Length: 307
Image 1 (cartoon, rainbow, N blue to C red):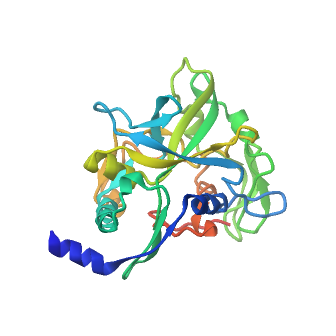
Image 2: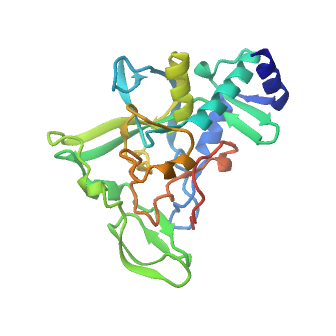
Image 3: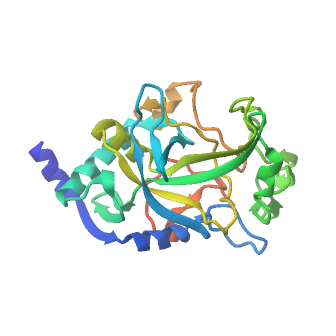
């Protein structure tokens, strides 16, 4: 163990500790990778958001989700991605050992730690980011008409640079490359209209979903078995709701555990995986560009064209 820790100390170097105020500024400046305003400028998902710190607590019984502390009560935590990769968890464990050498607990970060890992690059580690969302429900189904209204004045681009509004249900003459176009394309993933959260549910559905840090949460809650400090991003009282999240919420537990993202190819049909909000051609336009806010975070996603 001592030899392992020594190796970690040699390969990872602490560069800077960013204050909570600096973290707020960085988060306010991140942008969507493929969502634009009427002038063709990138939209910032957190521009008018309120950012604070709170706690997430481990699950209390089998099959339940961790809970996030909100006011005087706790709410179940949701995730867009119920798959945990062992190789990423191993990285988290090494970073945790490094942080402990500097008397920093991953479970109780209140800022962002910038570090350099020899041979890998420079990264930031910050508390997991949890977003608060409110969707409208009709008999347990998502009210698609209300979701469309949330994309007012929000546009995506096709392969030719043409702007298409997301506030209408169907895209017209959407070019997927420089030659081929689809004349009539549903904005939403085909699963969105059939996903049901319970026939008796109508009106507001408020939920808290992991935006960044699922592996950090899993490591701390499951292996360290401690509560974890997280960043809560929510609309300001006088501001509109956040833009819809890129994938639909599912319970944090149970989860699927794989050795790596590459090992997904071993399983021809995963019985539980993320459900994107938008159709396959545009599903990643709602992903965030963290580097626009000055944050360098590792990524698991495969590269796709986002115009």
